[in-house]
Length: 65
Image 1 (cartoon, rainbow, N blue to C red):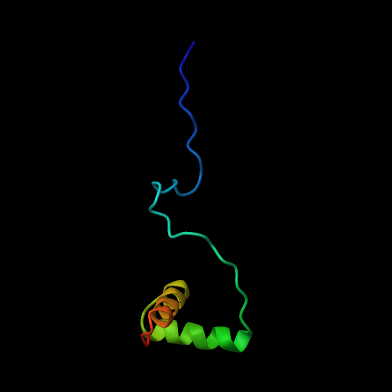
Image 2: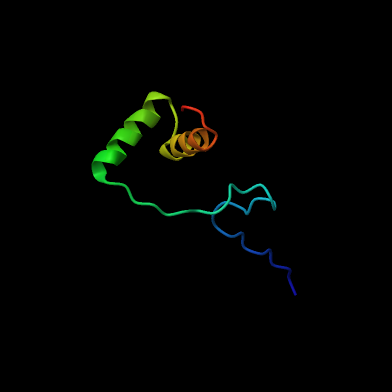
């Protein structure tokens, strides 16, 4: 019998335990609000997700973004 190699799964491999960001929380924004958020994220050279996280973290810590 010949030994066959296992096919690799498609996609990114799982991160080690404790290295993942956390839970994904779906949220909806009005189109005009989304446009403003995208513009602000682009102005500081961040992805929309990065900008949302940093803005929320600043608000939770009592700081201005």
